[in-house]
View (cartoon, protein in one colour):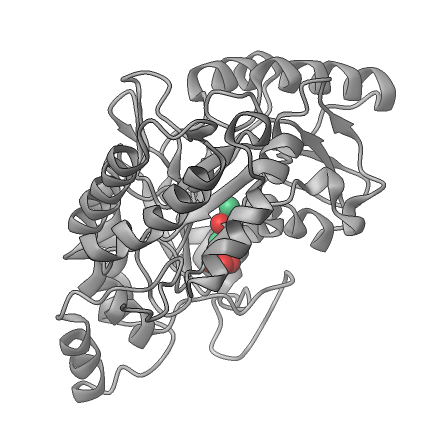
Length: 384
Ligand SMILES: *Cc1c(COP(=O)(O)O)cnc(C)c1O
């Protein structure tokens, strides 16, 4: 039997990436700016629509950092962040000497619970006498957060929203692309994301002024002078023209990638239908259109007769890489002291304990998917 390693998430090249890189070499634009950077930003602007302004950066984390700088976040400030996420959503808050306040998820999208968000804002104002400086909802695994409810609360309290859309390129909420709802949004092009630049990210800005200022900050905040003059602390966060060349090639196949991931998700649902105790992260209504970056399942051990961890180990035995869902930030040692707003349903903690990401990249064949589901079928058949 075929036992080659099935990976969780792999990059997939469209074919034209090397041509854009070759152009950069041929024209000697092997630097952190140039025609590929401009072209990549234009491609992303056209794709997202909503008249957004995009700045390509060296990482999604850098994008979050520069957004928080522009939202005036500094020492002593608080920033509200979804707890159920990757640490990169929250780390830049600490870079600026500010404190994260974590909010748990609701069970439908697995993203920031609007009710708990309201509770958190009201209590932080009561306790500290000041409003949190920003709200960071995340579209986890490409599933749109409940943006109407979140934006309504953010507007009522006049707190800007920074969307973490690192996993959500191509996802839509009410027909509008994720990454276009907040004052700012971050995208990631790391190796395992929807598209890759071999490492990179972007900040989605609402105005040209914000985008210009982002570029200024990302290139060491050089003043307009013939010599090197600086009036502000700057960063070295621009994307290289070589990496942007990969990004331009990837933009040509982005929609194919989105469709491939959605197709894989659909196939998993067919192959696993009827297995007791297995459920999926699912679009709660037609308003939500996840890009299905990773297909995630939850194992209800009482009903399934096996635990998530038993399943993960069984997969590993068959040379299949799977991974538990993100460990919530309020359970991370590094954020042990941060305020946390959740309730007895403990949505993210439960998902962390019982959830599993299945292999979900465009290179997977139907045979691969059958092998993955075969492991689940086998372990379930032993019990039932
Ligand atoms: C990947 C990721 C980031 C960070 O992006 P990088 O490009 O790796 O810095 C931020 N938030 C989430 C939710 C992510 O998955």
